[in-house]
Length: 349
Picture 1 (cartoon, one colour):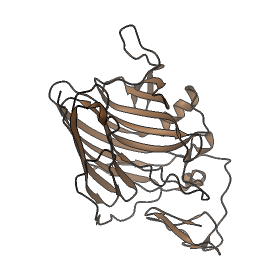
Picture 2: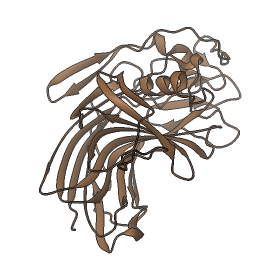
Picture 3: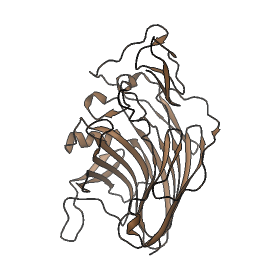
Picture 4: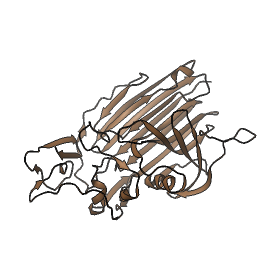
């Protein structure tokens, strides 16, 4: 069976601080890429052509391209067609994990899934629609990985499916009819109800939240709610580090066109110590098709190690010293210098 699908998406990165003036459209690579492992970088984002199941297809292609990077909004598109095989062929996605892990010897950006990081939030908005002809096998999902150490090998995979089109989650238990059996049913999170499945892909534990409604055409929630649920109710270790966040579509077979508008408040771009002072950040706003959603980071008290303090108009070692919208000190105490990590964050090193 011939598979054809098209995915268009817009990805929004909103800093922790107040919104800055809209940036000019950036010059990016907008050519079409079709390689099995092609990666296209634009600012803090990466478009990944993850055709990990390519060998299972008798024929087919997967091509993707970036359309524009306008301020914090990244537009992209992917078109795939596959013939043969019953497994997933590709997971074309936008990866917002860039910058989470730094070189050894530096304090890596990371999210620790412990109670000391409750001020972390990862608000995301994803509105999409899909048209198809005939039967298709695919899903639309967020995909996350955690590891025991910052930058370590993946231990757990956590998926939040927004749509399930005749596909199926990994499960440790199946019914007599061959259907996966959830480990938890009717879990209310983020304004929707989910069934949770658990199993192994041979390398990682896999947790999959599937909507009981079949599809979630408009998702506007805090992903941290799902992580909190797993650490509180399903035995996910609170000492795990969240190392990867992606959003895209897994393609297996069928014929469909998927158009989506994806907005992450990329709160994954956080210095190790940001979890201490997120409650001091200003509220931020998302504008979606003319509508506005305003979110205020929650307040929490933590016992994490306090970073070196700033003195007067200078920033201490490891402190923030710049980035989009930054209004604090931009000069580091001697002998440290302000080093740009990405457009949204500079650090005294």
